[in-house]
Length: 248
Image (cartoon, rainbow, N blue to C red; front, side, top):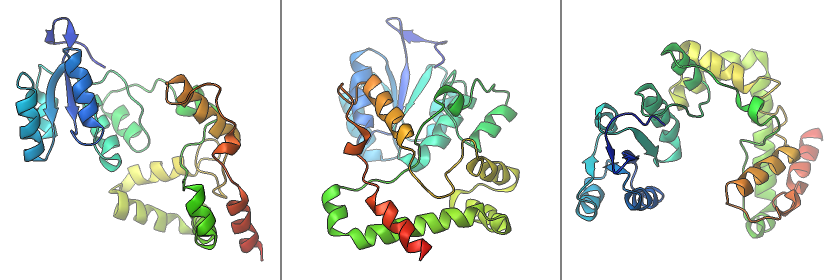
C-alpha cells in the first residue's frame, strides 16, 4: 500500500470500500488503530448509520471519489467477489496500492498504465489449486446424481473451451458474461488455456495444490496446526463417477 500523504497519529488513512458482511469488521479494526480515513458504500442508509458511529471518518457513496481524495493513502476492498478485482485494479492505478495481485486481463491493463510485473503467481507458489467447487458432505451424499451430473457438465464445458474450433465462441462468451473484449479477451483466454498455469483440461483437482492452499491458510491463521490431511476436504468419488459416465 502507498503510505504517502496525510496521516493520523502516525497511521496511514485507509478507506474501507464496501461496508457489508466483511467490511464492517475492517471498519471496526481500522478505527481501533486510528487508521479509518473513510467508509465507502453505495447503500445510503447503511452509510448514514456508519457515519453516526464513526463521525471522524469521511463517508462516500462513489468509489471514484475515494480514489481522488488525497487524504486517503490506501483502500481495503470488501465488495462482493464479482466487483473485487476491478476495484483493486482501479486502486492500484490511482496509487492507493503499491502492489497487489491481479489476474488477466487486469494485468495487461496495469502494465499499459506503467505498472511493473513483479512475478507471476506460479513463480511464487508453483503448485496451487485455485478455482474449485465445494459442497457439504451431507448434501453431496443426498444428491449424488445431481452432483455427478454437475461435475460431468463442468468437465465437458472445460474440454469444449480447449477445442481450437471453439475459440471465437469463447471470446464471445468472455465479452457477454465478463465484459472482456478485443485483445483483452484474447489474452485472458490464452492465460486460461495456458498448459503451465491455466485451468486443467479435464477440470481435475490438484491434490498437492490443495495441500499448498491449506498450508497458506494455516500460515495466515485461518487453520490451526497441525494442518489436516487433504482427504478431510476432498472426496474424488464424485469426479471419478463423472469421468466414468463420459467414457461410456
